[in-house]
Image (tube, one colour):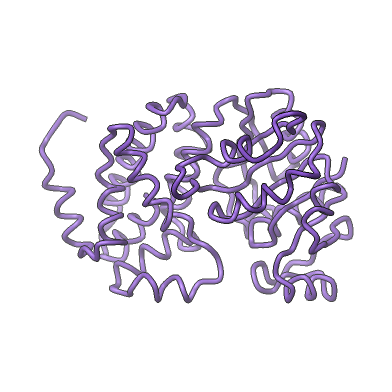
Length: 331
């Protein structure tokens, strides 16, 4: 079995190291010339994942189509706003016996489509490869350190899901399967919005009561929208839902939590983002979630307040007050 990983950011690099460590021949697509040169020279990505060498089973390429042809299973770890052009470039070389797995946690701006929806739109209808999503609480750094990690693989084709599950699972990385692609994709994207709120709350020196309430009510919002869009409710109480939500709302290494924390400290959004090497998906996902909630007629007060802090310069303390003063109702 050969695998391809598209994207050499922290998660793509970590996943390639993970696969290579399992003895799987893996080829990593690297967009940035300076990172590609460094990988060729030292087998280390000091920009996004310093301190970790790639196993000998991993090779590198700057040719996207070459990487697309190489693997029987392709893992795409690209930020949501860049996925459509990457999918379009891959489309001509994909084969029906390949599997394409999305590692992206986001929603396409404008269209409000999930990543597998974009894939189905872009990939050729005849002979389209099988599609899957891998998600769950999985910080890149902890995966390469071989800390026990559990994720979920979602696909409408359960044979496909099981094949990916067998490929990626190890003594320190355990994968479960589910047919609920909608739920897994929405949970992975929207939890980033709630993580922004968690960072804001922590920056204001609120305590454990506040964090617990935020995570719980955030999960309610995510579940409410997901079920309305066709997801299974139980998905949101699993690894892709509450598992990933707890991780991103409680850990300083979460990019979205970091952005929220800095916002709560009064730093302008533009300055925060310009100082980051990696993409905080939640910043743009907040806009898409707001549109989805309005389209579906779903009330999402936490997400709405995050939008107002990000894009209307609302004072975070005022947002907290407005959330607490909402009309009283049953849980």
